[in-house]
Figure 1 (cartoon, rainbow, N blue to C red):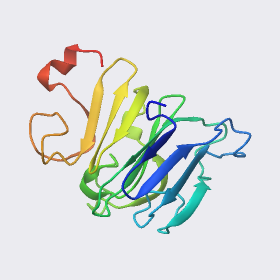
Figure 2 (cartoon, rainbow, N blue to C red):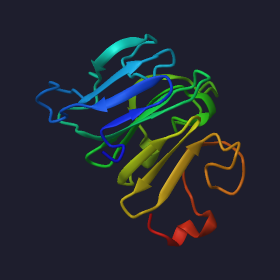
Figure 3 (cartoon, helix red, strand yellow):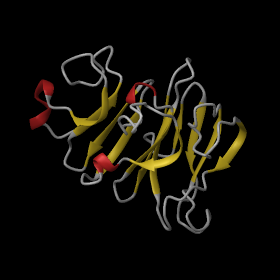
Figure 4 (spheres, rainbow, N blue to C red):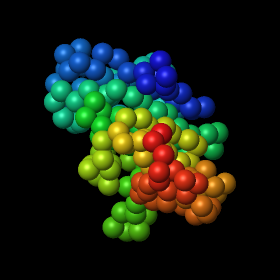
Amino acid sequence: VQGRFASVSPEHSLCRVGGDGFQTGAGGSGVASWGVGKRGQLGHGKRQDEREPRMLLSGLGYGIRIVQVAAGGGLVRVAHSLLLTSTGRVLSFGTGHSGALGFGYDRAKQLPDVLRPQYLDSLAGVRMVCVAAGELHSAAVSQDGDVYSWGDGFCGQLGHGDKRPVLTPQQVTHGGLEDEVV
């Protein structure tokens, strides 16, 4: 329904299941994933494909409820995933290519793959209500109606007025969006 409960990319699928903290067990996410997992986009902590839906059981915290899933990627083995919690926090995992995860560089100045869901701390102070994952980029909408985007901007798809990559979430203010509620 409106992309909140299931999302697919050419390589992997995500689906929200239950998510009440009881069906999935303590610390369960209420999310199942399957498909190609070579870049960690399934969130199970390994680079392994799954032929059937498998529950994500990583340490998101007890009672965390996922309200939206987004599977991004294309046909070039660059897939990533986003999860949105009921408290407006965003988690991402999968390929770090082009900054689509939003974590920026690590200490070694790399954009590593992330094999388990991790919170996007750069958005911790902003309550998000919607997430979307593209081929090499991601976006989120805040409760105030502001749009944030990050990742590869080679076609201008980030909306920041140029074609440069953005490695951590940045509010889109070009085109009059700073005064609009999305």
